[in-house]
Image (cartoon, rainbow, N blue to C red; front, top):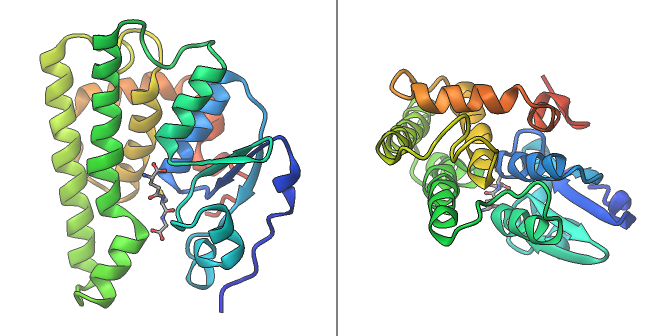
Length: 228
Ligand SMILES: N[C@@H](CCC(=O)N[C@@H](CS)C(=O)NCC(=O)O)C(=O)O
Protein backbone atom coordinates (compact mmCIF):
# COMPACT_ATOMS: atom_id res chain seq x y z
CA UNK A 1 0.00 0.00 0.00
CA UNK A 2 1.22 3.51 -0.81
CA UNK A 3 0.80 6.39 1.65
CA UNK A 4 -2.11 8.57 0.72
CA UNK A 5 -1.19 11.71 -1.17
CA UNK A 6 -2.37 15.16 -0.14
CA UNK A 7 -3.04 17.31 -3.19
CA UNK A 8 -5.00 19.93 -1.25
CA UNK A 9 -2.65 22.85 -1.90
CA UNK A 10 -3.47 22.37 -5.55
CA UNK A 11 -6.03 25.18 -5.32
CA UNK A 12 -3.35 27.91 -5.56
CA UNK A 13 -2.78 29.79 -8.83
CA UNK A 14 0.61 28.23 -9.46
CA UNK A 15 1.27 24.71 -8.26
CA UNK A 16 4.34 22.58 -8.80
CA UNK A 17 4.04 18.86 -8.15
CA UNK A 18 7.55 18.11 -7.11
CA UNK A 19 9.88 15.80 -5.23
CA UNK A 20 12.91 17.29 -3.53
CA UNK A 21 15.37 14.94 -5.26
CA UNK A 22 13.72 14.92 -8.67
CA UNK A 23 16.15 16.56 -11.03
CA UNK A 24 13.38 17.27 -13.54
CA UNK A 25 11.39 19.13 -10.85
CA UNK A 26 14.61 20.87 -9.72
CA UNK A 27 14.93 22.31 -13.26
CA UNK A 28 11.49 23.88 -13.01
CA UNK A 29 12.12 25.18 -9.48
CA UNK A 30 15.22 27.00 -10.78
CA UNK A 31 13.25 28.52 -13.67
CA UNK A 32 10.41 29.66 -11.39
CA UNK A 33 12.94 31.24 -9.03
CA UNK A 34 14.87 32.93 -11.85
CA UNK A 35 11.60 34.45 -13.01
CA UNK A 36 10.73 35.47 -9.47
CA UNK A 37 7.43 33.58 -9.54
CA UNK A 38 5.83 32.37 -6.31
CA UNK A 39 4.33 28.91 -6.37
CA UNK A 40 2.94 26.30 -4.11
CA UNK A 41 4.99 23.10 -3.94
CA UNK A 42 2.96 19.90 -3.65
CA UNK A 43 5.29 17.03 -2.77
CA UNK A 44 4.83 13.70 -4.52
CA UNK A 45 7.02 11.13 -2.77
CA UNK A 46 8.62 8.99 -5.47
CA UNK A 47 9.82 6.25 -3.16
CA UNK A 48 7.64 5.90 -0.07
CA UNK A 49 5.31 2.94 -0.17
CA UNK A 50 6.15 2.18 -3.79
CA UNK A 51 5.77 5.78 -4.94
CA UNK A 52 2.92 8.28 -4.75
CA UNK A 53 3.33 8.98 -8.46
CA UNK A 54 1.39 5.75 -9.02
CA UNK A 55 -1.61 6.74 -6.96
CA UNK A 56 -4.83 7.47 -8.84
CA UNK A 57 -5.01 11.01 -7.39
CA UNK A 58 -1.67 11.88 -8.95
CA UNK A 59 -2.35 9.92 -12.14
CA UNK A 60 -5.33 12.21 -12.60
CA UNK A 61 -2.85 15.11 -12.68
CA UNK A 62 -0.21 13.32 -14.73
CA UNK A 63 -1.28 10.05 -16.38
CA UNK A 64 2.37 9.21 -17.14
CA UNK A 65 3.16 9.12 -13.42
CA UNK A 66 6.23 11.35 -13.44
CA UNK A 67 7.08 14.63 -11.72
CA UNK A 68 7.12 17.51 -12.30
CA UNK A 69 3.65 18.64 -13.26
CA UNK A 70 2.79 22.31 -13.20
CA UNK A 71 -0.68 23.73 -12.76
CA UNK A 72 -1.54 27.33 -13.40
CA UNK A 73 -5.07 28.66 -13.13
CA UNK A 74 -6.49 25.18 -13.41
CA UNK A 75 -4.48 24.10 -16.48
CA UNK A 76 -1.74 21.52 -16.23
CA UNK A 77 1.53 21.15 -18.13
CA UNK A 78 3.78 18.10 -17.81
CA UNK A 79 7.40 17.77 -18.98
CA UNK A 80 9.95 20.07 -17.36
CA UNK A 81 11.17 21.65 -20.58
CA UNK A 82 7.65 22.36 -21.82
CA UNK A 83 6.93 23.99 -18.45
CA UNK A 84 10.10 26.07 -18.51
CA UNK A 85 9.53 27.28 -22.07
CA UNK A 86 5.94 28.15 -21.14
CA UNK A 87 7.18 30.21 -18.18
CA UNK A 88 9.74 31.87 -20.42
CA UNK A 89 7.12 32.80 -23.00
CA UNK A 90 4.70 34.16 -20.39
CA UNK A 91 7.31 36.04 -18.33
CA UNK A 92 9.96 37.53 -20.54
CA UNK A 93 12.40 38.69 -17.84
CA UNK A 94 15.00 37.43 -17.42
CA UNK A 95 14.96 35.51 -20.72
CA UNK A 96 16.00 31.87 -20.42
CA UNK A 97 16.73 31.52 -24.13
CA UNK A 98 19.02 33.73 -26.22
CA UNK A 99 17.65 36.05 -28.85
CA UNK A 100 18.75 34.46 -32.13
CA UNK A 101 17.40 31.22 -33.62
CA UNK A 102 20.82 29.57 -33.87
CA UNK A 103 21.77 30.45 -30.29
CA UNK A 104 18.39 29.16 -29.09
CA UNK A 105 19.02 25.91 -30.93
CA UNK A 106 22.41 25.62 -29.23
CA UNK A 107 20.91 26.09 -25.79
CA UNK A 108 18.12 23.60 -26.50
CA UNK A 109 20.71 21.14 -27.77
CA UNK A 110 22.40 21.15 -24.37
CA UNK A 111 19.16 21.00 -22.42
CA UNK A 112 17.81 18.14 -24.53
CA UNK A 113 21.07 16.20 -24.27
CA UNK A 114 20.54 16.15 -20.53
CA UNK A 115 16.77 15.76 -20.47
CA UNK A 116 16.45 13.18 -23.27
CA UNK A 117 19.69 11.24 -23.10
CA UNK A 118 21.32 11.37 -19.68
CA UNK A 119 18.44 11.72 -17.26
CA UNK A 120 15.92 9.08 -18.47
CA UNK A 121 18.39 6.21 -18.12
CA UNK A 122 18.70 6.89 -14.41
CA UNK A 123 15.07 7.27 -13.54
CA UNK A 124 13.66 5.27 -10.60
CA UNK A 125 11.31 3.31 -12.85
CA UNK A 126 14.20 2.26 -15.10
CA UNK A 127 16.28 1.21 -12.11
CA UNK A 128 13.33 -0.67 -10.66
CA UNK A 129 12.93 -2.54 -13.95
CA UNK A 130 16.62 -3.38 -14.03
CA UNK A 131 16.28 -4.76 -10.51
CA UNK A 132 13.01 -6.67 -10.80
CA UNK A 133 12.88 -7.81 -14.42
CA UNK A 134 16.54 -7.99 -15.44
CA UNK A 135 17.65 -9.14 -11.97
CA UNK A 136 20.66 -6.87 -11.68
CA UNK A 137 22.23 -6.31 -8.28
CA UNK A 138 22.80 -2.93 -6.65
CA UNK A 139 26.43 -2.70 -7.78
CA UNK A 140 25.44 -3.27 -11.41
CA UNK A 141 22.74 -0.62 -11.21
CA UNK A 142 25.15 1.86 -9.69
CA UNK A 143 27.68 1.12 -12.45
CA UNK A 144 24.89 1.64 -15.02
CA UNK A 145 24.00 5.04 -13.59
CA UNK A 146 27.59 6.18 -13.29
CA UNK A 147 28.38 5.03 -16.82
CA UNK A 148 25.53 6.88 -18.52
CA UNK A 149 26.02 10.05 -16.52
CA UNK A 150 29.78 10.08 -17.14
CA UNK A 151 29.47 9.43 -20.88
CA UNK A 152 26.75 12.04 -21.30
CA UNK A 153 28.40 14.75 -19.21
CA UNK A 154 31.82 14.23 -20.81
CA UNK A 155 30.13 14.62 -24.20
CA UNK A 156 28.66 17.93 -23.08
CA UNK A 157 32.02 19.06 -21.76
CA UNK A 158 33.56 18.50 -25.21
CA UNK A 159 30.64 20.14 -26.94
CA UNK A 160 31.02 23.28 -24.83
CA UNK A 161 34.80 23.38 -25.32
CA UNK A 162 34.42 23.10 -29.11
CA UNK A 163 31.66 25.61 -29.28
CA UNK A 164 33.28 28.59 -27.62
CA UNK A 165 29.94 30.23 -26.81
CA UNK A 166 29.91 29.32 -23.16
CA UNK A 167 30.86 32.05 -20.76
CA UNK A 168 30.13 32.04 -17.05
CA UNK A 169 27.12 29.91 -17.92
CA UNK A 170 26.37 27.30 -20.59
CA UNK A 171 25.66 30.03 -23.08
CA UNK A 172 27.22 33.41 -22.47
CA UNK A 173 26.93 35.23 -19.18
CA UNK A 174 23.26 34.76 -18.34
CA UNK A 175 21.60 31.57 -17.10
CA UNK A 176 19.51 29.76 -19.69
CA UNK A 177 17.39 26.64 -19.90
CA UNK A 178 20.63 24.68 -20.35
CA UNK A 179 21.81 25.76 -16.90
CA UNK A 180 18.42 24.84 -15.43
CA UNK A 181 19.14 21.30 -16.65
CA UNK A 182 22.86 21.12 -15.95
CA UNK A 183 22.82 21.99 -12.25
CA UNK A 184 20.32 19.26 -11.24
CA UNK A 185 22.11 16.69 -13.38
CA UNK A 186 25.42 17.50 -11.70
CA UNK A 187 23.71 17.30 -8.32
CA UNK A 188 22.64 13.77 -9.25
CA UNK A 189 26.08 12.89 -10.57
CA UNK A 190 27.67 13.97 -7.31
CA UNK A 191 25.08 12.10 -5.30
CA UNK A 192 26.08 8.89 -7.07
CA UNK A 193 29.78 9.74 -6.96
CA UNK A 194 30.27 9.90 -10.70
CA UNK A 195 33.84 10.68 -11.72
CA UNK A 196 33.62 14.26 -13.00
CA UNK A 197 37.35 14.87 -13.30
CA UNK A 198 37.03 15.31 -17.07
CA UNK A 199 34.31 17.96 -16.73
CA UNK A 200 36.04 21.09 -15.32
CA UNK A 201 34.04 23.47 -17.51
CA UNK A 202 30.71 21.99 -16.45
CA UNK A 203 31.76 22.17 -12.81
CA UNK A 204 32.81 25.81 -13.15
CA UNK A 205 29.47 26.68 -14.77
CA UNK A 206 27.58 24.89 -12.00
CA UNK A 207 29.60 26.77 -9.38
CA UNK A 208 28.66 30.07 -11.04
CA UNK A 209 25.00 29.03 -11.05
CA UNK A 210 25.07 27.85 -7.47
CA UNK A 211 26.35 31.24 -6.34
CA UNK A 212 22.95 32.67 -7.33
CA UNK A 213 19.96 32.70 -4.98
CA UNK A 214 17.46 31.26 -7.52
CA UNK A 215 19.63 28.16 -7.89
CA UNK A 216 20.33 27.93 -4.15
CA UNK A 217 16.65 28.16 -3.25
CA UNK A 218 15.80 25.39 -5.73
CA UNK A 219 18.32 22.98 -4.17
CA UNK A 220 16.83 19.69 -2.91
CA UNK A 221 17.99 20.37 0.65
CA UNK A 222 15.90 23.57 0.77
CA UNK A 223 12.61 22.01 -0.25
CA UNK A 224 9.70 21.52 2.17
CA UNK A 225 9.81 17.76 1.58
CA UNK A 226 13.60 17.49 1.97
CA UNK A 227 14.99 14.45 3.74
CA UNK A 228 18.54 13.77 4.81
N1 LIG B 1 11.04 14.11 -19.29
C1 LIG B 1 10.38 14.33 -18.02
C2 LIG B 1 11.04 13.42 -17.03
C3 LIG B 1 10.27 13.37 -15.73
C4 LIG B 1 10.86 12.30 -14.83
O1 LIG B 1 11.42 11.33 -15.31
N2 LIG B 1 10.70 12.48 -13.50
C5 LIG B 1 11.20 11.52 -12.57
C6 LIG B 1 11.88 12.19 -11.41
S1 LIG B 1 13.28 13.12 -11.92
C7 LIG B 1 10.06 10.69 -12.02
O2 LIG B 1 9.01 11.22 -11.74
N3 LIG B 1 10.27 9.38 -11.84
C8 LIG B 1 9.29 8.53 -11.27
C9 LIG B 1 9.53 7.09 -11.61
O3 LIG B 1 10.54 6.78 -12.27
O4 LIG B 1 8.69 6.27 -11.22
C10 LIG B 1 10.51 15.79 -17.61
O5 LIG B 1 11.47 16.42 -18.04
O6 LIG B 1 9.65 16.31 -16.90
